[in-house]
Length: 415
Ligand SMILES: Cc1cc2nc3c(=O)[nH]c(=O)nc-3n(C[C@H](O)[C@H](O)[C@H](O)COP(=O)(O)OP(=O)(O)OC[C@H]3O[C@@H](n4cnc5c(N)ncnc54)[C@H](O)[C@@H]3O)c2cc1C
Image 1 (tube, rainbow, N blue to C red):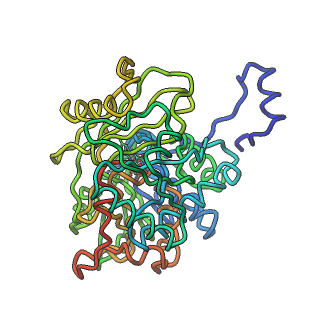
Image 2 (tube, helix red, strand yellow):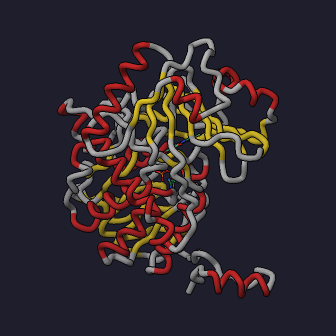
C-alpha cells in the first residue's frame, strides 16, 4: 500500500528524516497473461491504465515500458497546457483535457503543480492578426476562453517584452486558463494510483512483436517473455510507426526531433507562458525559476534525442529579440524528444486494422496537455470496443476519407 499524502503524513515523515516513505509504485516481473496490455509508459499509457482500472473496472492490466516511465516525451516536454486550437473537434478535445487537469492533483492526491498562469500567443503581422482573430472567435464559439490583446495590453501583461523587435508585436491571443504543470509529477501520479488499483507497471521491457491470428492480437512479444492478452493499447509517440509495423499496418506519421532547453534559475520574471509562432520560439518560467524555452521541430525525419544546433540558434535569436533582458542568461540543459507528426497536426485516437488493438498517438508537439483525455478515451475504446464521440473525428480512417482536422496554424510552433 502506498502512502497517502496529507499534512499529517508530511509532518510524520519530516520527523523521521523522510526515510520511511514507501515506494510510489510497484516494479514487478511480467505475468504470462493480462486482460489488457498497454505499450508505452508515458503520460498517455499511464493515464489509460489508470482510467481502465478506475472508470471501467479492468484492473488486470500491464503497462510495458522499454525504458523508465516518463522517460520519453512525457519527461522531455515544455509542459504547456492550452486549448486555443481552431477546429471545433480540437477545441472540445483539448478543453476536456484542461478540465481534467483542473482537478487532477485532488483526484490523484498528488501535486502535479498545475498552474493556470495564462498563455499568450503573439501576432507580428497583419496576417497573424487575422489568424488569431479568427481563432479567438472560433474558440469562444466552441465554449473555451480566448481574448485578443492590443500591443498596450501585451506590454501591461509582460513589462519586459520588446514590442518593437524586427517583426513588431501587433497584438496577442490570450488564453487565461492556459497553464504549465510538472510533467514528471503527472506520470508519477498516474503510475502511483494505477498500481494502487492493481495495474502492473513493467519497466526495462521492450515490445518486439505481436502474435496476430485472424486479424486479432493473441499475445505480445517482449524482451522479458511472451504475454497473452485480450486487448492492446499503443501509446508510444515517436515509435508509433515501429509498433504499427510490427502489427502489420502503416500510419501516416513522421518522427522528427523537437528540442527544448532551460536557463539558470531566476526570481519570478515572467508572468505567463508566451508563444510566437511567427518568429518561432516560446518560453515560460518553471516554479524552480528556470526559463523553459522551445522552438520548432528539426526539419528532417530522425530518431534522435539530441537535435540540431541551427534550431537552437533560431529559437535563441527569437527569444533575445523578444526579451533582450534574457540575453546574458546561461543555458543549463538542452535535450530533444522524438515527436510523431501527422499530416493535419491532429492526433490519432482510433481503432486499428487489428481488431483488438487501439492507438492513442500522433500527438506530435502537443500531447503532454492531453495525457489525461487521450488515456481516458483509449481506455474506453479498450474496455468497450466502441469509439467515444470526442475521439470519433480523430480516427485513422480520416486519412482515407480526407475529412482532416487541420491544425497546422494552431500548432505551427511546438508547444
Ligand atoms: C521538446 C518537447 C517539447 C514539448 N512541449 C510540449 C508542450 O509544451 N505541451 C504539450 O502538450 N506537449 C508538448 N510536447 C509533446 C509531448 O511531450 C508529447 O506529445 C507527449 O508527451 C506524448 O506522450 P506519450 O505518453 O504518448 O509518449 P511518451 O511520453 O514518449 O511515452 C511513450 C513511451 O513508449 C515507450 N516505448 C516506445 N517503444 C516501445 C516498445 N517497443 N516497447 C515498450 N515501450 C516502448 C517509450 O520508451 C516511451 O517512454 C513536447 C515534446 C517535446 C519533445
